[in-house]
Image (cartoon, rainbow, N blue to C red; front, side):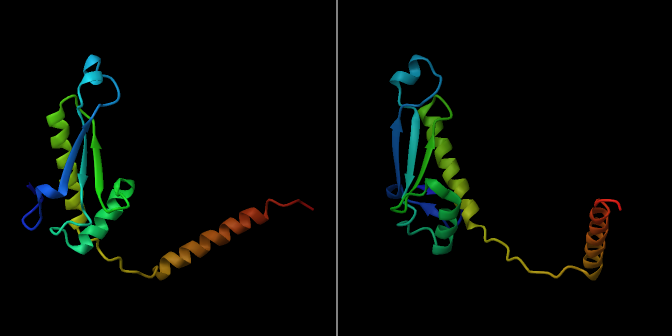
Length: 137
């Protein structure tokens, strides 16, 4: 069981881990030990996540979100399988916590009269500069 916050806990059946060989440097170790972890979280079927959180999580996950509604995180940062597993779980928790934050609604505002006047003045000056660049008669 993975605890995200007071309200959200992820059950073991929602997570599956697969260990594969890591790419990159590591000498003989990289050729014989499967240290990279691929953590798969069944987010779409998860009863612990509310619908708005799922929608935000899908947007945050991007291409890590599969067509069947699973979130896949691949970690091969360290040479230790256990450490990679912990890092993957930490990243999942961070992603879910970020998805729980409700974005602030943007309030549309009008530009001030002074800023409009200054912008138009600047445009007029630029126009005059460009008009003076023509041929001299």
